[in-house]
Image 1 (tube, rainbow, N blue to C red):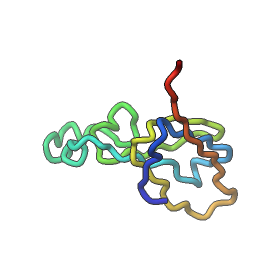
Image 2 (image 1 turned 120 degrees about the horizontal axis):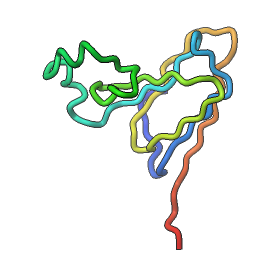
Image 3 (image 1 turned 90 degrees about the vertical axis):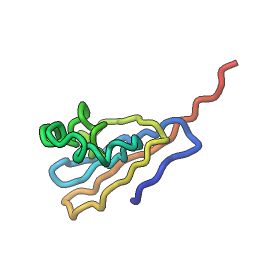
Image 4 (image 1 turned 180 degrees about the vertical axis):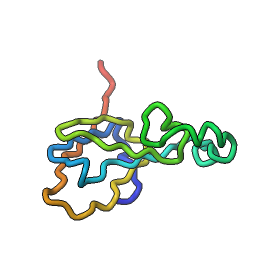
Length: 107
């Protein structure tokens, strides 16, 4: 699935019901900070010493690739552009449930 957002909701959720991290690909999130695509040029030593699969340094990269565990549920801002890479052939299907959350004003 190509890069997209879940607007006008507030949060998106993905529950990975069946997922084999040796056979399936997870979620690719695009960094909306404008410096992400320039980190490797502006801070090459820092860029080379980090990894875009590490949540702690994901802000330095143009994209962040998240590999979930089976039965894990993640919640993220619906404003974050994200995509699902084409899945390779596998013995079992990758099964996930996606939902959106909108927070209404409490009165």
